[in-house]
Amino acid sequence: MQEMNCAASQGIMFDLELSEEPFSYGAVVEVIQFEHIHRNQTVEVYTTDNSYVGREQLKKKWDKVATVNVDEAHSYTGIVLDTPITVFPGRKQGLYLLSTSGDAFFLVG
Image (cartoon, rainbow, N blue to C red; front, side, top):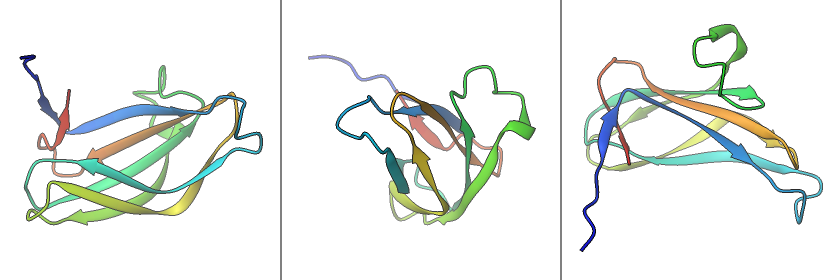
């Protein structure tokens, strides 16, 4: 049996990337769902063109696209983005989900 290792983090950065086909015109992301610790929390969602890599400390390169209040009764939360994100074929779009309290909140691993 394989052991599963998870950690908790205040925020998580990742990239969305589309191959050239079959999405020749790109894809629009309107909702993001994520797993988290059971705790009332406010989460903000940011995006940046291209990859998040190299932009981790550059706040001016990120645009906030959503804020959601998370209910501790659930371990998954969906966020409807205020501004949908278009991911173009062959390109990356960086995303950053951040707990505003400063506490470890996201399950990673």
